[in-house]
Each structure stands twice: as C-alpha cells, then as structure tokens.
Image (cartoon, rainbow, N blue to C red; front, side, top):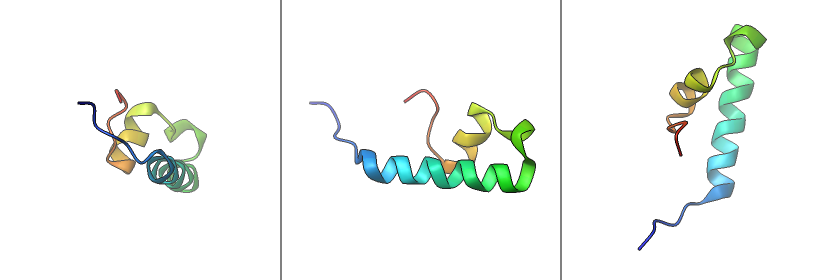
Length: 45
C-alpha cells in the first residue's frame, strides 16, 4: 500500500526552505540539492 503524504505540510516545509536559502545565499544558492538539504526532503520524491 502506498504511503500517504501530507502535501500541505511538505509544501510549507519546501517553501520555508526556499525562502531561507534565498535570504541567506541569494538566487545562486537555490539548487534542488540545497533545497533538499535545507528542508530534509529528498528531491527525488
């Protein structure tokens, strides 16, 4: 049986990570790998 994901919570987590990265590193620091590391969500999912 597939795992159910709380998409709203995951979306909020990713958005928060993106905002933090932009504030700290600017647009140049905004990569999928950095977003995954900051949000602790694998970019593969």
